[in-house]
View 1 (cartoon, rainbow, N blue to C red):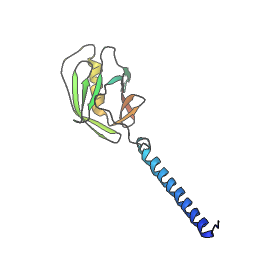
View 2: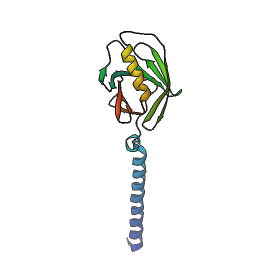
View 3: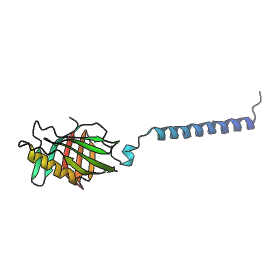
View 4: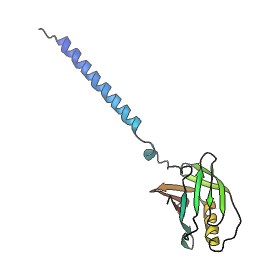
Length: 157
């Protein structure tokens, strides 16, 4: 059996091509399977139907804890770009827009019942909600800001 230099050289070239092809396919597979949300910096968007319960209102005078029994919540409808819920006493709604980490609530409306126990809290909530221009979702919390100033803290439970 005679082995020529040509046969050895040909097998070496074929083996190099197979290795290069395998490396290219591996790189393509890894790139396609990675998630983009962590690398792009674009925040997670609030999901339709998620009930975000208000935990704290940040006011210039200090942090206001939410009174037990008021059940203030915010729920998004991404198809209609509307948001709403319960302000503590009254039902409310609004339009909203999201662009990157920017969010705004427009045309906020509510029913007009007066509730002595929750009225100040609800007024503060609506006042802060109107000022919101940025959001972060982190560790099961929705944080609403005016620039870098935290205004409202929500959680899913």
